[in-house]
Length: 494
Picture 1: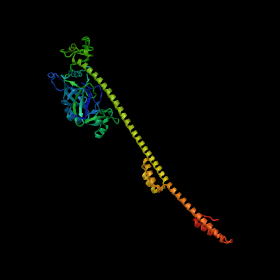
Picture 2: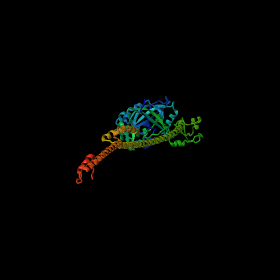
Picture 3: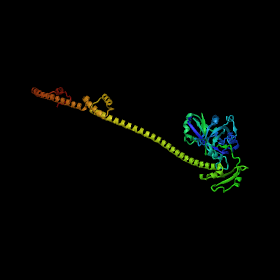
Picture 4: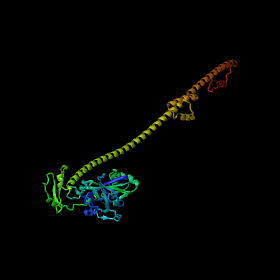
C-alpha cells in the first residue's frame, strides 16, 4: 500500500521510569502500572518469546519531529497496531517481533483509560502497546531489552521505540514557544493555505516556524500504523518498556559493594558479585567488558548475559552516536547547500528581472532610434523631391505614402521612375523652358522694335519734309504711337 507520507517517530523511550527531562505534564510513572500491559504469555513454555510493553506515543501533544495526532485519529488507529511488526531501526527486513495488544493510558502515570473516556479528552494521553520480541530471531536484542530494565546497568533506559504511520493528509497546527499541547493550537485546515505554508514544516526541510510561531503537522484522514522500530535514540515525553521478568531480585548498592571481588579474572575491569536469591542457585557476576576479545567461553561461564549485552549495547550506542553525528553533519551540509541554492535562486530571479528591464529599455531605445532615423530619412527624401520638383500639396501627400517605407535601393529606383513621370514638374526643366521662351520673346520684341524704329524714322523724314518750320510734332500723338508699336507703357519719348 502506498501513502503520500510516511513518518517515523523516534520519541518513545523504552525505560521503566520517567525521562530525565523535566516537564510540567510529566510525573513519575509506576513500573507496575506499565507492567500490566505486558501480554500474558507463559514464558516457561515459550522460552523463545520476550513479552514487552511500552508507550507508543502521546496523543494531543507534538513530538520532537513536529508531528501530532488528536483523539479522533488515536481512536481510529488504536486496534490497527495489533499484529504489526516490531523491527530494528525501521529496517523492515529486520523484523524481531510483533505487537499483540493496544490500549490507552494516562500521560505520566499509565493508569487505564477507556475508549469512552478519551472522547472527552483534550489533554495528552498515551497509546500503550504490548507485544513480544522473538529471542530466536535476535537473542542479543532480547538481552539488551532486559538489560535496559536493570537499574544497575549502564544500559539502563538506553532502548527506545519509534512508531511509524502512513497517511495522505494533514492540517497545520500553530503553537507559541513553550506550548506542546494540541488544545492550545490554532489549526489551519484550508488546502490552499496548507500548500502555501507546508514548506515551513521540518518534515519538508523548513525551520518549523510560521510568523514567529511554531508550525507542526497534524496527521488527518485515513491513517495506518505501519509498526514499531526499536532504536537507541532517547525520548522526551514518554516512558518505556518493561518486560515480563523485571529484575525484582536486584539488591541495593550496599550489598553489591559488600560482594566485590577484584580477583575473579584478570581481564575484568569491574567485578560486582551478588547473590540472586537466598538459595544461591545462581551467582551473578556483573562486569564491564571493554573489548570483544574479553568474551571467552570461560568468561561466559561466570558472568550473566547482562554483562555481555552491556558491552553490545555500548557498542551499539557508540555506533549510533557516530551515525547520528555523521547524519547531523550531512543534514547540516544539506541544509547549508539548500540555503545557498535558495539564495542563488533568489539572486538569479532578481538578476533575470533586472536583465528583462534592461532588455525592455534597450528595445524601447532601439525602437525610438529607428523611428527617429526613419523620420529623418523621410524628411531628407521629401526635401530632395521638393528641391527637384515643383510639387503641389496633393503631390506631396501621394509621394509621402509612396516613400515612407522604402529602403535605399527601392528609393533610388523610385527616384528614377519619378524622373520620367514627373519630368514636366522638374524645376530645372521648367526653368530652362521659361528661359528659352523668354529669350524667344525678347528676340521677337527686338525684331519688331527694329522694324518700327525704321518705319518711324522713315515716316519722320517724310513728315519733316512736309511740315512747316513753324510747326512742331505733337508729343502726345508720338507717345501713343510708340506705345501701340511696342506695347510698352514705360517707353519714354524725349
